[in-house]
Amino acid sequence: MKVKAASDWLQMERGTKTIKPNSERHVFDVYMLVAMLTQAELEESIELAIRYREVPAAKEIRNCAIELYGDINAPGMIELRRQIKTEIAYPLFREALNKILGV
Image (cartoon, rainbow, N blue to C red; front, side, top):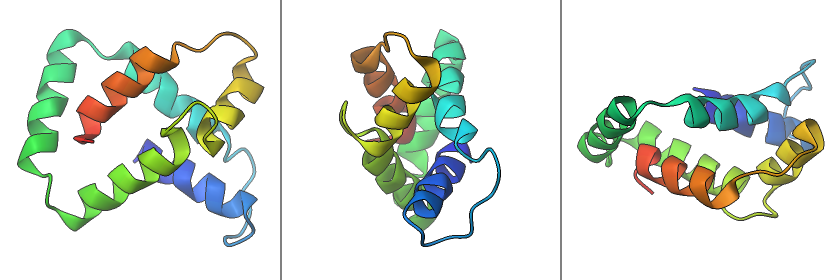
């Protein structure tokens, strides 16, 4: 849900959706939720990603995540750096996010 909310923020930034106050926080929330996962939660997320890989909603979320966080200069990563103003463990974040979403 947070990836979708972060994607909505991006659409608002691009002017294709109505702007909602504080919507940029969802970009940071995705990063924090990934960082807080336990090993057991990560493994369960991987299983769910595999099980529901072909569900259209899952495909949409994967595409949103790739657009937002797909490389260090993707819109979500730029916004994340703007918000936290510190070093981001991008390779670790991206690896975990890929596993969680089945990318």
